[in-house]
Length: 319
Image 1 (cartoon, rainbow, N blue to C red):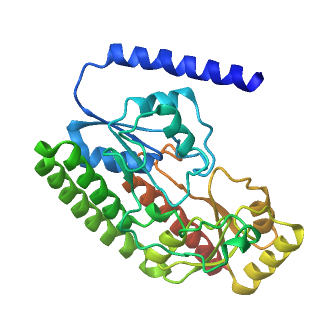
Image 2: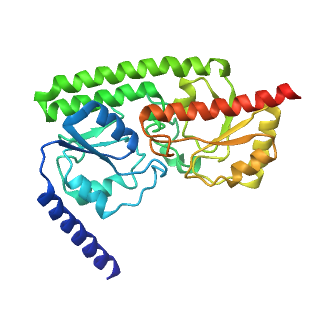
Image 3: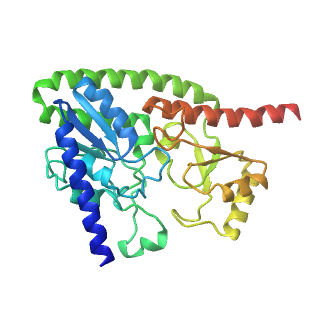
């Protein structure tokens, strides 16, 4: 009875909010909804003044776990396009929201549906018997889904968005393509700056809390020597933390990176016992106040990483 009553209340709220939206809608912009704010920022850059974009998740939330809300369903009801990361990253919350929206336009395979991973060169595709995957922790069957953390992959995301926008609004295809070219040129220019900044720190070793960063570390030539989690999604045991402390000391590692949605106590315990520092990385746009755009995402993470490296280099020189 509780379950049925909850469903009735949920659907009533959605219906009421849908009616308010229908009454309020007064423009003909293409309505885009994205799962993550990174996709929203890129979609705004490609769609320009022709689109209105909203993201469901916040940048400080774990993208694996987002609680569905009636307001999320409303966004999908009114959407002309829906963009998500795919590769089972959002599998726990995107399918239920799409189902409740009943908007076939943005459902899987619909004219307004975009899986941003199309054409992506993926890392860490597991070569494991599916029956053994659960024993490996939070393993993604199709490959590591955090591909947006390589800025070069931002171009592929943007291309996918441009192509779909051009189908939905063919009369504006040239406009979208022009914005795509501008975005690509801006990313190329930024990449030169980012790579130049990272030149002194090539192949530096760090430890990460969770395996979110292979695309980022591969692009910027950083070596993740170990993880606070013994397996993805598995909380660390005292024994594992001791092994990480030994690794950090033996390899002279100075930096442990972590996303804001993880408990930082184990990471701080490791750092305190090994003369390292815990650095909070932004996993997405809007994770921190300073990270307002896709470009800010890389500026922020590279700056805090370089600052940590330089702090320890300065300390070593004083000794």
